[in-house]
Image 1: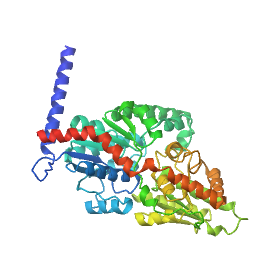
Image 2: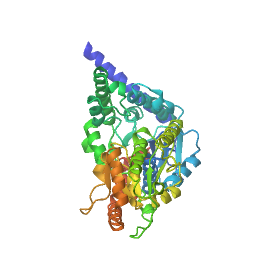
Image 3: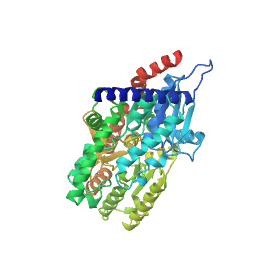
Image 4: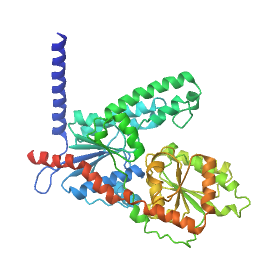
Length: 478
């Protein structure tokens, strides 16, 4: 009897899935070409497509890559940026990243983006945001069901939703694992961090409970992510974590993000160049970017320069995008920290700067600064190296394993881990001879071909080709 009941359940469940898929396909918007044939649709799930960060650069270059190779496809972006028109979003992509799309993009505006906001979940944030992404995903799926679905922002729980309910081919570009073994290790070792509050790290009981929660979530995350037919990750560090969690190494490929190297390499590097004593940091104002460490390290460095000339010659520029009120609040806190340390006149904030200004800022800076622990990749690090600034990055993650690594047997930059080592590295760079600094900058620039947009175009379209070619055949038979 139990066997019969089980078989009936499977049959009814299968019929339900079939009915839902049929309903979604019938309701979904159809795009036609000039000959009246249905165009295959590729949907990109990126609720913050107008944020202006490295993830958004990947989104727009990926769309451009597909449009160049497959002009017949219709690209769709699922976004929650309801305060911006399609024209404004595309204009920002041109302004911030210098990316111009050869074809048109259809935007699906989602109304439930607050379901994935971290502020909505003061506790169990990872689980809350992931389950919230299902709410957002259902809205996206019922608004427009694509032929192929690509998650480009890290919402792995949407992959089985679109694959099984939507009947879509699915792929993912992973910038950063939602949970990692490093996070588990920090909680296990009871290390306080931005994602492990001090009251938890100081309690053995709470730490044990959190470890159990993390392990359960990691299992759910791995199960969801493994539904992806093609998995693209942005660095060796991310690859290790995703293959460990998702356990589909045969479908997982390292695809470095497209960095706008050619634009920055237009900036000349010369031996006798006289740059101002300026340090620049380019990153979004998020907790994990650790801009407070930058200000503290800069202050520490200045305190060591009291007997070495005028301290006011040194400047720190924090350039980046603010996504929301929370980010603006962080900028306010950073200004207060600079004032508290007595360096407010030497710390300059440049918010939401256009690409032309960013290029100029990088070109006029002697040091490009990065402080995020276990940065998944680090597009800003690559851009600083391409612009001819000496890179000073965190000794972890993508910068340590893929970017700021020896090339032709010579260094391409410096790495540090804490306030003291960053301050010491700043002093080392400023004390270098012009010849040594020139050799370091030139070698760094020479090492960057593997991060070019051209290389990304080739690899991205190649990995998507088996699926996209199949979409065209399917649409032609419809």
